[in-house]
Amino acid sequence: MITILQKYLPEHAVQPCFELIKANHVHLKIVNERVTRHGDYRRDADGFHKITVNANLNKYRFLITLIHEIAHLVAFQKYGRFIKPHGNEWKHTFQQLMVPFIRPEIFPNQLLPLIARHFRNPKASSDTDVNLSLALKKYDENSNDKNYIFEIPIGAKFRIKNGRVFQKIALRVKRYECIELASGKIYLFQPNAEVELLPN
Image 1 (cartoon, rainbow, N blue to C red):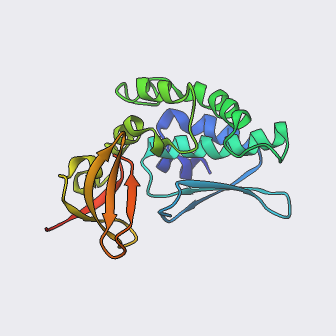
Image 2: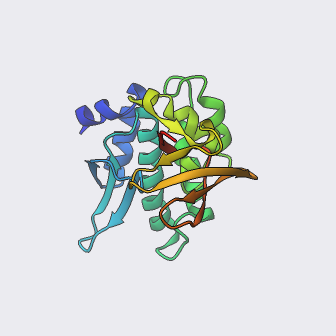
Image 3: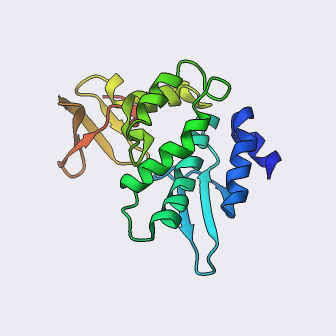
């Protein structure tokens, strides 16, 4: 397990993550990319704790995702199965589990203040924290060939991962209003949504 974790985590996070996995009897599975989520926690009928994390994540996002999912497990065990999945109990647990990792031996200096700010009140997904999400994406392997909604001009056409095509219309408060060309419906996108720019 340690040799597998070394491939996916920052060096100084490997041993403490291994201890957390062992202490909580986690069956960790590293899986192919799922567009809708970075990770997942389930307790199966046999009582085993199964956590899956996407293999394509950079090591910093992998670490945050792994601790996010372990926090679900620990929060459910501590507070019971009927708490909200991303409620106060989970947030408190996630903060406690993450604090030992928020240090310069693990995260680059440019990420540390963003991570510290995020963990004052962690969200259900780090993707909804636009500043942190964009900073984390800089460490992705293929970060140069990605466009983000905020970068493309108003009026530009783009495709999202599921193949649907949109046109960017306007900025509405913090999100971008876009029209789906096939249906004419209006959708709102986070500024850090990854898109494929199409020729107009």
